[in-house]
Image 1: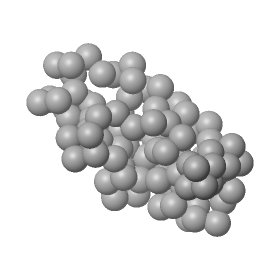
Image 2: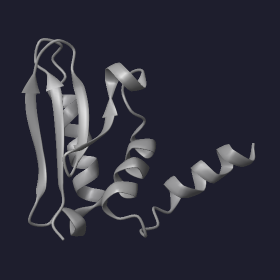
Image 3: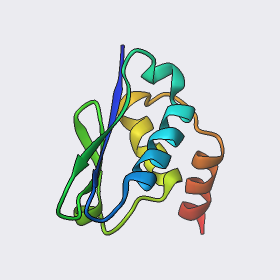
Length: 100
């Protein structure tokens, strides 16, 4: 199955570089899952910063309280497009937080 990532960012806030970095991180991590679908950047206004995986919003700056931690975002995207995939260090970091 082909998957897609979409990062919507505010042009007024000059968040394009942050959006591009997040898209690059997700493309690197999920290159097999995103082959044929890819990642797109979508300009917006009004302070928007949202990340979608297959048209499902997985992060919203407004609703989730700021910008995503990249490790947390990768887990959220993984849960949507590749739930059986192990993320290595990202999964270990989450497990340590739950234990501590």
